[in-house]
Amino acid sequence: MRVEIIKCLQDNYSYIIVDEKNQIACVVDPSEARPIINFVEKKKIHLKYILNTHHHYDHVGGNLELKEKTQCKIIGAEIDKKRIPGIDIYLKDKEIFFLGSSKFIAIETPGHTVGHICFYFDCDNILFSGDTLFALGCGRLFEGTPKQMWSSLKFIKNLPNETLIYCGHEYTESNSKFAISLLPDDKDLEKKKNKIKSLRKKGIPTIPTTIGEEKRFNPFLKVDDEEFLEKVDLKNMEENMVFEKIRKLKDIF
Ligand code: ZN
Ligand code: FE
Image (tube, rainbow, N blue to C red; front, side):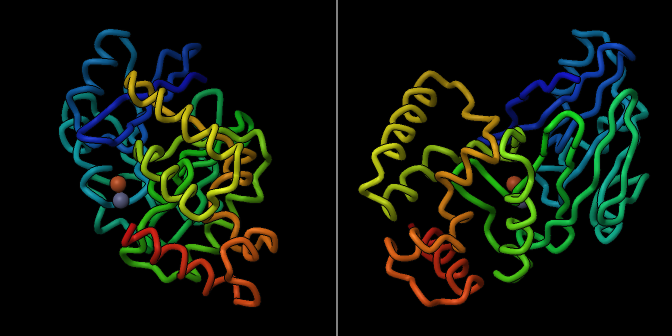
C-alpha cells in the first residue's frame, strides 16, 4: 500500500491509503471533501472507506459529502458511534479489519477525546495516530485524563522502532521549540529543530516520523525516563503526574 499526504484546512493532514493492486483507496480523517475528491478522480481510483480517528470536526468534516459522492463506508470507534457523522462500521479495541490486500488493528487511545482510536497496519509498519501522538508532541486533553493519555502513549511507544507515524496535524515546528525549551543542551535535538525549520520554510511536511525518533526526542514519551526526569527537575514524581505537568507546560507555552 502507498500513503499519500493530503493537506487540509490550516494545518491538518488527511491520508489516502492507495491499494494499487485492487484500484481502491481509503482516507484517514478527511477534514474536507474537496481535496480528497480531486485526488481520487485524478487517479481514477474508487474510494472505499473513510477511517476516522475521532469525532472532531477537523477530522470528520468531509465525511458526509464524500459518502454521498462515492458511496464509501465510514469506519470509527464503537464508543463514538453517536458522534461520528455517517458512521457505518464500528470497531472495538484491538479489532482487526481487512482492507483489500492489507489489514489494520483499531487501537483505543483515549486522552485527546475518550473515543479516540489509532489505526495500526501491523504488516506495513504504519500507525495513523490522529491527535494522540504528534511528531515531537501529543494532543491536548479535551476529554480524557492525564493517566488515560499516558497509558495510550505508552502503548504506542512499545510498537517497533521502525513504525512510521502519520499524525493528524503539522505541529512539528512549534513542538520542536517546546522540546528544546525543556532540553536546551541536547545538540541532536537542536539539529533536528533546525532541519524541521528548513523543511517547513519550503512547505514540506515533517510527516511521517517513526517510533524510534519519537522515543529519542518527544518529551511526552520520556516521562518514564530517569535521565530526562533529572534534566527537567521532576525526579521522584509519579509518571502520570509528570505527564500532566509536561502537558500543562505545553498548554501555556
Ligand atoms: Zn482533535
Ligand atoms: Fe485535530
